[in-house]
Image (cartoon, rainbow, N blue to C red; front, side):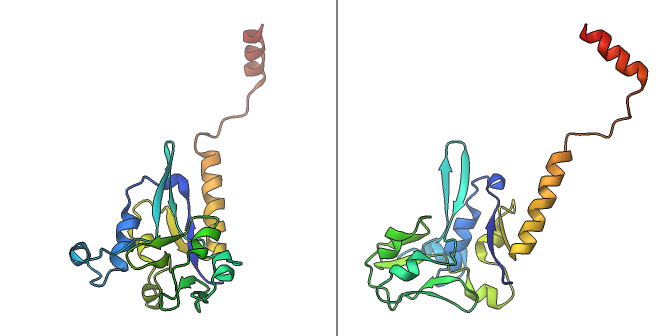
Length: 186
């Protein structure tokens, strides 16, 4: 099974490294300094959202039945060979149907180009065997580029570790311990 980007939201510290890496990866220069000088500036395809005290990296989920693909009247929203949903900017007419129907807010309207913007999973990086830029930049491993099986294994291990984090093996109570606890209860 192919890899995809998974999110472990409780790890996010809102450092926005993913946003910066995404913008640089989608810049013409592919460097931070160069990207800062570009006009118009490169746009990120991932956004750190805050809900109260919690933060979450919001991006396209590359849905198996993507509503943006079926709603697009020109066929600009498509799937690539790695099953990622992407927007063909040459076909995009800026009608924003994809923006309207996306239940995750993963497609945004780029006002400067009048085209739809969304996560494309960094196809150039993936073709070289690298993880998408946002995943590589994340210092807390909130974003993971793994197969669904690898992600499930990771979550099972994390659940088991959390379940036993504050517990210590204890000796079996003897008869005197039981009597003492009963005496304290009375």
